[in-house]
Amino acid sequence: MDTPDTTATDAPPAPLRRSVLVGLAIGLGVGLATIGVAYAIVAIPAYALAQSDPNGLDRPLIRDALFRVGLPAGVLVGVLVGALVGVWYRRGGHFPTDRTPF
Image (tube, rainbow, N blue to C red; front, side, top):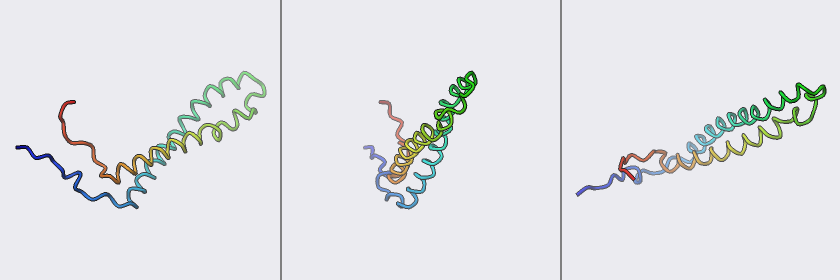
């Protein structure tokens, strides 16, 4: 008779401080990457269009794109991913090991 492997569920949860720090570290990295990608997606076409207009680079959309698009997107994605990683790490932080087909 096969006995299921319950070592992952019997282990105590990770310390709260460590799981919060792991979540913050991962969330910060993902947030910074998201800021860069969101800003690049907005900035590259906006700068290309602004080059054709004499006052294009002085428009508020071009100047404030980082603060209106990049930072909010980075903060939102960073907080969400950081919270998910923190909860995952607190609950054991392991991927499933069984290789049974669905």
